[in-house]
Length: 252
Image (cartoon, rainbow, N blue to C red; front, side):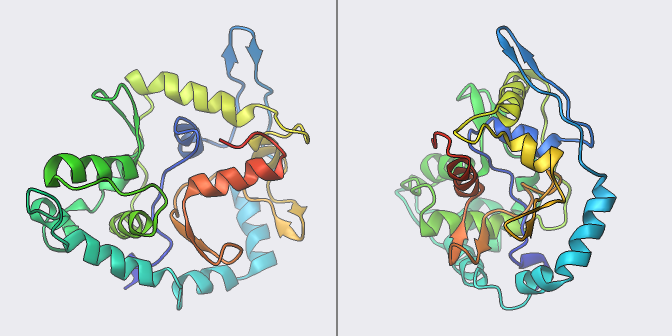
């Protein structure tokens, strides 16, 4: 089914606050300020429309077809659905106990994450919310982050929101976390003295290692995702760690 393919909605970033930046960017990159810290302002290399044109000219529909036809991560979707219906924990419940068969009532839930959570006084990601529900509502153990089961369950539930717009709030108590993530996005770091913004704003649409450098418009809308380079499905945090490693920067 189209709405359950790998190109799912995902909005996770490491550090957690940075996702608010990655999901909320417009066409103009602006400088952020902090006492004793200045962020370089960068202009996009081209419009989103020009980037999409270059992408189609360079890749055609090959990547889209690979994502939709015989994607290896489809196995995780099936396993994730099974996990959503699996009774676990001391309370004898499953995700389906509260959210309906196959957890279908969670359609659209992923579009609001990450979000500020007053109980933890910080940003709650969707995998964190899943674990909180497992512990509190099911009496089950939390899933290890980036484990097979955690990725499968997250992938499946997020796939229910395919095609829906991201609706992340950066107002109120979430604002300081957004600003911190924004500073991290523009911060030059590592031996190469790069920042996220240099590649994905200033040079988006140009080639590096025979690939087009992606722009920041869709960075967070398709994770967890299967990558050929990994040979498995991984999280956006893993992808960001890879970028930091390529920058020869400190990896969290």
